[in-house]
Structure formats: C-alpha cells, structure tokens
Length: 639
Image (spheres, rainbow, N blue to C red):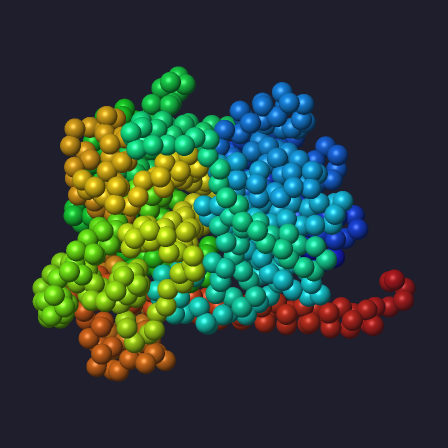
C-alpha cells in the first residue's frame, strides 16, 4: 500500500512534497515524484513495498511508450497470474508489481478509446489511483468499487484539481474551511458519508467512482465488479468455501511477511483457517495471529482465540486493550488526525492500538472485514426479517411495548419495538441511526436507488454501500496505514461478494445469522467454536466516556457544560443524559455522547491547525521582511 498526492496546477511541486511528507506513515519504504515537463501535473507516491522490491517497481510508473504515468495504492488479487497472461499475449509489463499490472490494463483501455471502468471491473482487490494521460492531457482518479482504499480531491484555483490519500495531506496543497453542515449526518452514521468530508471543498471519491479531469472539467462514471461464474443455491456452500480460499491465497501472495487478526469471531476464524491451510500447502509456516485482550471477561475473546490458534497450529500474539484515560485520548487523537474528519466509532481507539502492535511484527495483515455485512451478522437484520410479522400485531400492543415496557427489555428488544411503530421506512431510519439524542436532528444519508428487495435486503445493501466503506474499512485503512500496516480483506473479493449477493438476506438468516458462511467453514473449525454467542469488537463506551470527560474537563458539571454547549437540550435533560450514559450504562446514549465528545475534540484539532497556519503565515511574512531588511543593509563589498 502507499500514499498518493498530486495537483494539476503548475509550480505545485513544493506543496506536493509537503503532502507526501504528511503521508510518510503510509509509505515508509520510499518516495517518488513526477512532474509533467509542461507543468500540467505533479504526481507523488509514498511507497510501502509489498510486492516486487526491485527498482523497476518504484513509483510513479511510466508506461513503456511514455504516454501514461501512474501513482497507485493497493493490491490486485492474482496479479502474478494476470501479469503472466498479459506477457504471453505479447504485452510488456515492466515489473511484477500490482501497480505494473494496473498500468497495463488501464493504459490498454485508454489507448483503445474505451471506458476504463469496464476493465477495472475485472480487477478484484483494493486500490486507489491517479493516472496522467500525456497525450490527451487527462488526469484519472479512482478507487475500488468496494471502497476499501481512500482518495480525496478538491477543485481549486482556475479549474485545477488536487488529490491525496488523506485529508491532512490534501490540506498541505490546498487550504480549506471546515463544513459544519455535516454535523447531523455525522451523528447519524458516526462518520461523514462520501462524498462529503467535513471540509467545504474537499470531497471523497465514492466507492467505485473513477473521475476524469481535463481542461478544468470533471467527468464521472462507476465501476461495476465482474465475476467469473454464476452460482445456484445447491452449490453455494462449496462455491463460497472455494472462493474464500482463493481470495485468501491471493491476499497472501506478497513479498513480505503476512499476519492475521484472530478474534473469537466467525469472520476472522474463516480467514485464519484458510490462511493456515494455504500456508501449509505452500510449505510455509502458518501466519502469526493477533488478538486484543480486554480486562472485562465478558468482552474478552482471548480464550476462544487461543483455542482456535491451537487448533490451527499457529502462533498467537495478545495485544492488551487501552484502558487508562491518557492512553485512550492519545489513540483517539491519533485516529482523528489519520481521518482528518470527525469519526465517532469508539473502536478507532482499539484499532489504533492494534495497528501499532501488529506493525511491529508484519507489514501485511489479513482481516475479516465485511463478513457481517455480506452474510447477515448484525442483529438489526434479524429485526428487519421479522418486521412484517411484527406489523400484524395490533397497534395498541406495539405502542404499549414501545412505551414504558421497552425500558425493561434488553437493548436489542427495546430498539426493535421502538423502531417498529410505523412503516418500513421509519424502521429503516430508526434502526440505522446511531444517535440516541432526538433533539439534535441526526439525518442518515441513504442512496436514492436503495429500494430493491424487502426491508432486510435494503438494510444489508445500505451497510455494504455506505456503512462498510465509511466505517469499518475506513477505520482499518487509517489505523493500519498510520503505522505502515496494510490490512487485506479477503471476504471482499469479487467472487466472494458475488456468491453472498446471490442469496437473499432472508437466506443468510435462515437457521441463524450467517448460515451460509457458517456452513462453508464449519469443517475447518474446532468443535463448538461456531456455536458461541457473538461478542464483537467494542470497547466499554460508558466507562471510557467518564474517563475521557474527566481528563478533558474535570468535574461532572464542567463536562456537561462543555459537551452540550450550543446544543438545544435543557440543563436538566443534559444531566439526565450524562448519568444514563455513564452511571446506568445505556449503550445507545453512551454512544451518542461519545460522538459528541469526538466532535468537540475535532473542533479543538481545527483550532490548533488554524493557529499553526497563522503562525506559519506570520513566520513567512516576518522572514520575507527580515530578508528585505538584510538585503538593504548588506555592504556592497560583501555582495
């Protein structure tokens, strides 16, 4: 993986180099920069070497005919097979890297005048790229259709565009102002959904969106993933097992050491079992596993991870979860700097600590991201599956359940009855909204074409298209790449996703959550391993909230004052919310207040950044004045 930065305006090399410096953590193995001789564009790359360490693979890459220049971040599944096939067909691929394959495929499409989105749909993997066409004077920017790798861009000046892998790096090229209008969307999602970012002019490329810049104008299109086979229900289990194994094998095809996350969950367990099997087939040692340990035994999956590691015959490294307030705040600050925008999932603290620890052992790590969204792992999917039956219950009973009785129910039951009072659209909004504070007007961003299938299908499609790339995949990328660690996610290979999508949501839930995935991996798991209840990778938010609030602001009254400042919530209600979150452990309320405290910390970051910009500008002006004064007072004999 790498970090990308560039701009089309002339004379931007110093700013692009500053952006690359801000991306050094993403590419600790080298830096490359290319500028168009006519001054039309500058492309820069910070490289993390995962395949082909030779000098021929250094980026930016230039095509053999000199027409195309590529800056690439990512990996392509089966890249060695594809490169071999291209060479047999007479094409020149100048290195064995994923980037060289990508340059050849994309360059061939553009030479023929075709739509580059079509050949990119044939490439499974995770990537972001910038490609300059010297002949047509076009800049292409894009990211993979799942949304695993990030890319941001901004239009500025007289029709120019700048881009970077992270917001902080892009702000080194083009200063921009915060966008406070994202607040209600941030509260609902706990992140800012693409294409918004939290800054007025900076946009995220949407998953699978390549854009073409030429002469100040931008054209956009979408990549549609292609698959090799069609599947039917009878062969789905065997097909899925084979597709996951191949995807894992492709993700392990690297020139660096590979590790794997190994919690007690089904997703990471599936990846780990396949990875150990592939390693042994290749005559290699099984990859080392990594698990995070919690003090609370009810949240700790270390015993189950040890059991699985012993079954698979692999080494297991235990990473202790952050617990002290200073440690929590330090990891949170690092995570927010990596995102550059507000990000309210408290698991970012855990992922920062995990990334720091794993990176000390391996530069590549396999993860089970996407399993819940693909195979029906979240309880709200089961709620959606029985929504139709719930609507047949008389209205007065449903209203009674949603009233005082809901307070006596477990969290999942309470959310179900409260969200199930109206039609399917109301249920969708309630069950997906992460904000527990009704006064703040949180609003989901829902794709307009998300209408196929029943409520359960829509819920899963929403998570695949919006929540997965904006939340879990973004968190894995930023928290891994902050330490030069590349997470690879085999469950999001094109073939695996095609099989998962060929089964309706109700089919994944038949017989319990993730029935298809469970059946596919059961023969590889220890007895009883798949029957345990799902724990999840979640911190003790209520405890953290109290610790962080006390560290930042001290006494409870001051915490409440700072947390709710400027918000339309009465004083008595503010105190009630804080106590419900921290003393009574109401998870939804705690999560909503955590999102608020993160927003306040992000505002502090913005203020600090603004002061630094002012000081830099003042220093530049003072330096210019000093230089002028010195020039005027230097004796002629010294010139």
